[in-house]
Length: 295
Image (cartoon, rainbow, N blue to C red; front, side, top):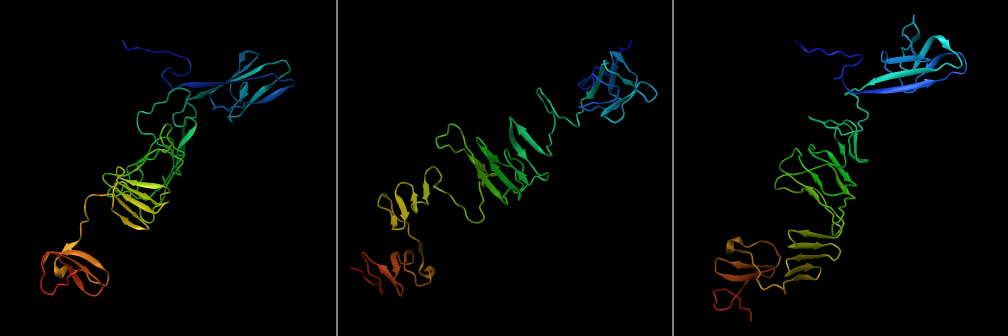
């Protein structure tokens, strides 16, 4: 025997219903009552002194515009009018979810999203202006990240060979508890971490690798490891115990121009330099024909 369910009003399996209620106590003869929260035509009940009235132009009242209720016979001083509206939950227009809200599939945000009172996503509709959490951006879009706490990661750009954006602005990124108060900004796909087309400016010291190369723009100094320093006074190699690897090649491969050059000549196994006019071999224990001896 098939199961049968009976109910009055909405089915138990229907979406949640919100009830709006308003009570009036007229002091003069009144036929028109304005329902402040509005109503859906057909989802309304009107009571006069506890008795339910019948809707319709030929009956007790008319409610057809979603705002007002007009009685066919005026309520007088001492009467009590109660209007009850049933507002069905509409999944296509959710305005409030006081409890937990779970989306089983994709979630599309055409406007802005706020989490914990903080706006994490703002878009103009075409995805050209994003702030907060940024993923899956089409290459060439403008990207702006500001006021974020913690790490900021930008991934999923369509250009897989390198990562490019028309405009990338990162500001106000902080991580609580970090030693320097600055979080981590990660930009990259695969092995290419960051592509800069134009000038890149770092205010402070830029470290490349694990402290292997540091560029100090304030003091105009470059440190390579712990033994090489390059600054405005020259190149300081005094702290290293290794050597200088010179360029090398055959006599035919000598560079052209009037610059002073120093190189190893592989044709005659000799150290040589160019003084602006002639190539001069630096000889230690043999004297090839045509060589100049330095003493």
